[in-house]
Image 1 (tube, rainbow, N blue to C red):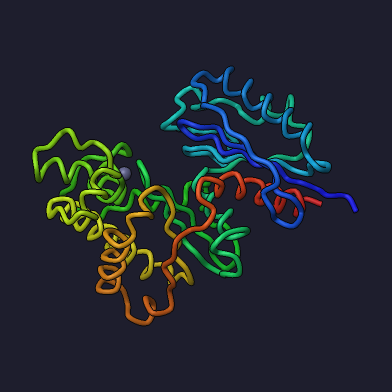
Image 2: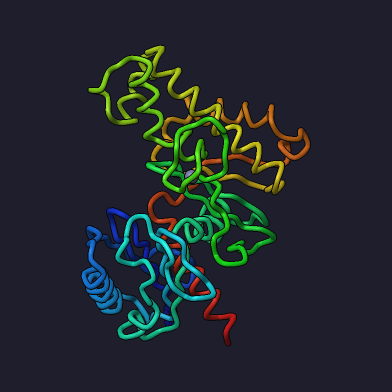
Amino acid sequence: MKTYCDAGFDIGGTRLKYGLIDSEGRLVLKGKVRSPEAMADILAALEEAWGSLKKKAPGPIRSCGFGIAGFYSLKEQKILQSPNYPSLNGFPLVPALRKFIDVPFRIGNDANMAAYGEFAHGAGRGARSLVLLTIGTGIGSGIILDGKLWEGEGGYAGEIGHITVNPEGDPCNCGGRGCLETEASAPRIVKNYQALTGRTDVADSRDVYLLAKAGDPAALESFRKCAYYLGIGLGIVINLLNPEKILIGGGVVSAGKFLLGPAVEEARRRSHRISFAGCRIEKASLGNDAGLAGAAAWARLKAGSRK
Ligand SMILES: [Zn+2]
């Protein structure tokens, strides 16, 4: 029997990741390269990766999906604004990709693709509704409602990282202030620690984690502050959507007991008891592969629905 595959690309700020999912949902092949900056170089890297996937695929590739950081307009089919790739802003990506991607393909927001990946192949399998929060340098998120990815009217839904959790908080890249992303992502853990101790030699959230593990009170307090705001964000999500699951992914998941534990407690205090009780808050399972797995699964779904 022939094995069909679907390809997924996750075009991130530092890495361009790609892979193949077979018809059983298994990730059968993956690779990554450093993300180039210029548009022509990005396209060249994509073309090369596509060629390599086609060559190594165990069977024909049926469809291909792309997850891209930024605001991708579903209506205009172009990226309106990409924080990592200014050269992509307004660029007509679809005709450029069509020159070498010879199967049906789809483009979406990277965080939405990651949420779809967890829903289709990861910790969200079987759930009817879920929210994925990926906490790292920023906070990405995507929403699955009633078994479908909720992209919103224009494709910009799921920006939970930019809901206000602290009205008096720091300015955010989005133009807002005190967003979940500015208050609870990895850089904030470091900023909290530096503000409490004056130690600028501690510049990585992993170092703060190790200090917290050793019982350092300032490190513990740095996490507690982030957990407080993360809990406010989770409470908003629970009250707004009543989701079956909230999955948390990203680099800070390993700081579970310092961040997630207290955040869940804060969410319990700030959401309706019944809604909170019906929501399972768990770790995401696909790690860095969520985006490419989701892009592939999403492309497959869309290619299938066109027939
Ligand atoms: Zn923001």
